[in-house]
Length: 403
Image 1: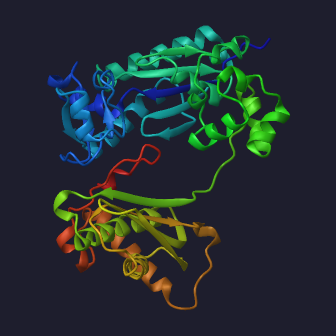
Image 2 (image 1 turned 90 degrees about the horizontal axis):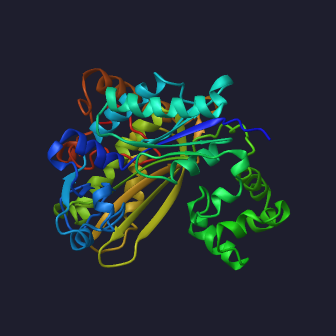
Image 3 (image 1 turned 120 degrees about the vertical axis):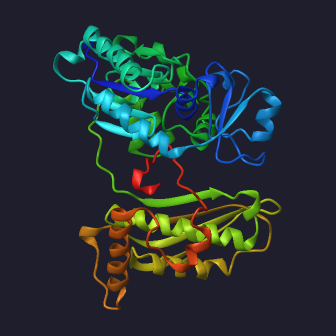
């Protein structure tokens, strides 16, 4: 049987917390929680392995983290540094092997070719990557690497041994090597899919892997199930290029901005940031959505359809229109999403003057890029320029100019 390994998948371990421990030696070996702000009402966006040993994980509320781990060291996130280290790590990996895809701020996939596909050579490359990151980026930075016949299983492998793991999944190891995993350990199986599998009596990975192709097609409701069957067996597929579907930003409000006025100000800042990203990506949007999470009532969300646009003014007007519908209450977080995106090459020019607004927005972008962020901005932003600083979503890496 073919024993070639076609993919290497790298997952940085507790990335944000690891960068903080690298930069601050006094934090090494101690439980660390990275938080968006110093408040008990927010949550940890990252936790070191020392903190994870106490049950603290991503999403744990700060108040709960302190109960689980009284000695936890809380550190306010420094996203610009995490992006800088991300690019340095990418360069380090690229010096060992070309990167096929940067999947997120802490994950990347490399396609093995030629002699690299042989087990001994692939393992050597993986070990070289680990050593190169330590030498060129940070002596305490660790990563887990999975090697497998396809990218899907390589990612699974990168999660099987942490921290600093190296797992090889050969075709002859399948499917038994996967039996010890939880069903939810497989990428693409979230809570809803797990519930659906349980309805079909599938509670273990062994049961999942013993399903026939037709059974998986039935459970998934189509060809996705059949594709999943092949992926679990090591079959390799070319990834289809996907079009960007949305651009969004959200922000947990600091205590002093948990008012209706403060929440609206932060939402305005989020609109400006999202609009600038949209233009850099050369996309146009035709749907504006927003949500507000409250401390004293259920969350609220709504959307409005738009004529294709990418200028800030039109999007701020959409925000103002929806904001009139926001119910009363004490806001905790706000978020906006631009969706139904259209690539610039498919954009239909308007007959109603929106192009002038787009040209104005792009002129402001050029000035801000040349002279610094927020050199030119709309007057409404003057009092909230520092609100909603750029954060990193793990699947979306900001450009350094976002900071």
